Length: 262
Ligand SMILES: NC(=O)c1ccc[n+]([C@@H]2O[C@H](COP(=O)([O-])OP(=O)(O)OC[C@H]3O[C@@H](n4cnc5c(N)ncnc54)[C@H](OP(=O)(O)O)[C@@H]3O)[C@@H](O)[C@H]2O)c1
Image 1 (cartoon, rainbow, N blue to C red):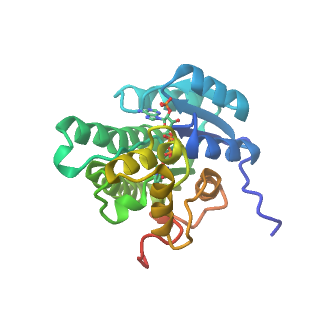
Image 2 (cartoon, rainbow, N blue to C red):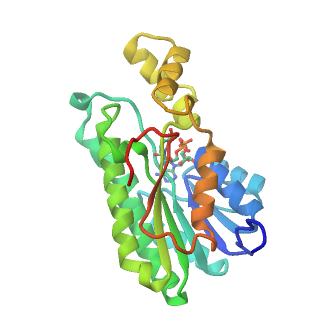
């Protein structure tokens, strides 16, 4: 076998939440490996700029909009047939359990469960008809073991892991391989940006932002946060024709954070 060419060869890949962070790094890596990438994000200008820098196509859509999935899949099919879908759009915030509102819970559910569910439901039939496809759900270590930073995040990411396995079981026999990736803390805008989780943790604990980041790094066996390229590498492999024997997995990419053997 030759080297590790992922074998995308012009295959169409959709990445949601692709205007920055893990999604943008994934889109960049997929494009560099020869995929035709459709980048999705809510802000029209940001997604157009991201698509331009990556050399892909951009589509402004909010994945929590019930009509978004159909529009995204139709666009990808028109580009030549959707090969891989990456459900990456997601977010969190630090809020104590007793302060989480119904709207907080519902918003996290729509973003982490209903959005990815509708996209998989829209994408899988055409993939199955072609007998090949890949779906990767970007979940979280917080879905593998409960976290009180944002219980609504933790619970909906656990649901997203289950959702991923359900679609894996439903479609594996048709050649549509569905897997999840569970990152731990990653140094994207979500953590390190202005007002991000580091600033929120600092404010809650009365410490500096640097101390908050040091405390987070100290909880991770490798001793540091991951960067987005490290997560993108795992996602890109699972999206690729090379990942042909992986289905229903939930790969941790968390520097050893969750101490489990399955
Ligand atoms: N960073 C971490 O520590 C970490 C750890 C574990 C898991 N994750 C997961 O990894 C994924 C990406 O996180 P990240 O750190 O890269 O986040 P990020 O830097 O905040 O980027 C989030 C991306 O999602 C887009 N987005 C947000 N809501 C959307 C919606 N409703 N519809 C479409 N696009 C939407 C944003 O663009 P617009 O605002 O323009 O829509 C942006 O491109 C998330 O699912 C997150 O839960 C992250």
